[in-house]
Image (cartoon, rainbow, N blue to C red; front, side):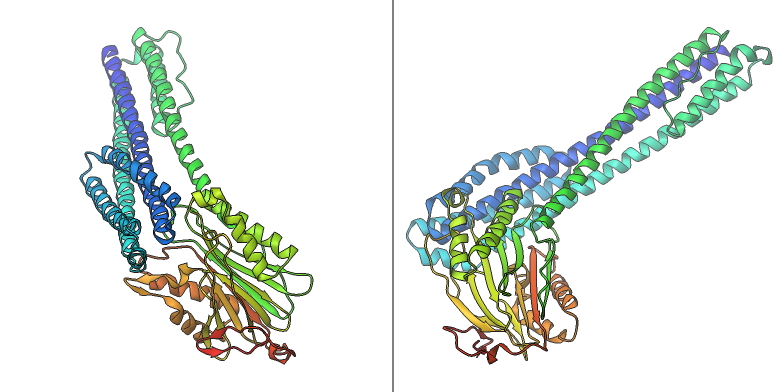
Length: 529
């Protein structure tokens, strides 16, 4: 009987250690493989985004320094795709998804080479025409779709591996329980007169097994005086096994804590994005302000969309909506700097032309030029009588909802950071009482289903249909409609800033005097202030 007890204990120790080590290893390996594969896939995405920024900047401007990010991304792409292939080797679904990512990336590179060659040959119009045809954009969109499918497949493979590890753990616990039952049956069948020497130690070991089966590893089995040598050795072995299981459990818990820390870091990035926007909008008598920032549905990095509003001491309301090209923490930080620079310039001299010139100088330094940074911005200055001065640096024009809803047809200047000393026309438009002016970034109107863009027409149609709704509801429904229209969810960040004048205010057209220029909404000239 003593020999049988020893054999049962050895089986228990072996099954428990082997099963838990195997399950813990599977958990750890599945998590590490998934993290490495995601990191490799995201590096390839970063390569393509950097290459796209450099290629587009060179094609549009012809500046050779724009090619630097493209060349760096192109040179490291081969190494990055080879690393990804190594990481997915042995997983047919991941290998297939990786080849699709490489195929779509190579198609984009081929288009980029064509555009660069046209530009270098002096065929500027042909190069710009290819950019306007959105061939490269369609191919980068195809690459993004393949990249998304790869990430989903990485997550699916990880889930299957974790499911297998769960089954291994369940079988291990079942085996431990079965071994404990066998050990108890052997002890019960032993001779009663040996109870003091064998029964008590076996009962203590059985209790320890039950604790392990329920995940309690911190209580060792106490040694029993007078126990036979075999049971004493069994107790010692069980305690050593329990210590090893505890170490393995701690390793699994540490991996879980690391995962939680990564989730907290992602949440912190989200908070940083929110911190780029004003904490609250100013309260202006007779004016209602509502703003919303909606991140891209499948965004992986921080974007550069921002907005701001500032009430001046003379009662005028300064408004800005901008979009800094690119993604990532550096771009988000530059966008925040651009917003703070706007605030500083407005407080010193709110004149639109002066402010935009100052922002262009901020973004047109040698370092910014070398990084290929540029931004679009629309800046408006609304007086209490409804007169608004507005200037645009390559940004989509706002829409005006009065008797009807129409986009403001207005002259615009170049984007910020591209030219040294350009001119931005400043136009004047009257916002009548009860009217609503809606500013937005291009992520709203460029939401698309195939080649059908959401566009300005749908924007105006929805605003007219929701005219009777509160301003907050109109903004929310506008963004929701763009999201529904896009077959993949929002592809880019969206900022919407809406300004509504109270219907009880005097009309701005009653103010004596005229303006040097006026914006036109939907082909009809807006009343001059």
